[in-house]
Image 1 (cartoon, rainbow, N blue to C red):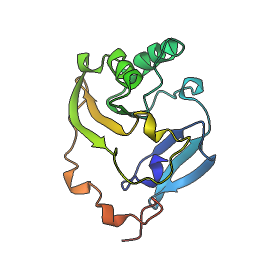
Image 2 (image 1 turned 180 degrees about the vertical axis):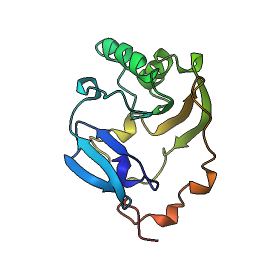
Image 3 (image 1 turned 90 degrees about the horizontal axis):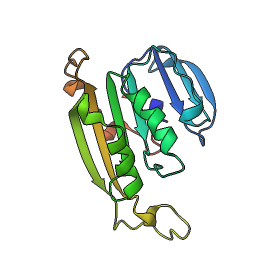
Length: 172
């Protein structure tokens, strides 16, 4: 869950993932916060209307069957000030869904990263999702053109050495 990687303070963080272990907490990084991990599909979640950032990891499911879900996602995503998306860059359905969101029409790119994990020694991946073309990831951080400018956060970027081996932030 993304809440394990956040270093700053947030009023609330909700992670929606059909495979996540349910969790509720009232603090994050030592400060009051509503933290929820909800095992459900995004399409089934009702937004409160107070969200300011939308992070979608794994935008890879766009096909004929899921086209209505992508149309709903487009409407929702355009209501946010900040959008961060990840999809498999070499997997056609991820790029198609990203294009269907029509983000360049309303958002400016703050950052983008292309991450290639192909060719790493993963061991025996028989039956795994990795060999299917999902190993090249495209990440985009976007800011709505009508949103107020971001305060520079460069000083707050996390250093990988701040994390323990299990993905949770280590004590400084």
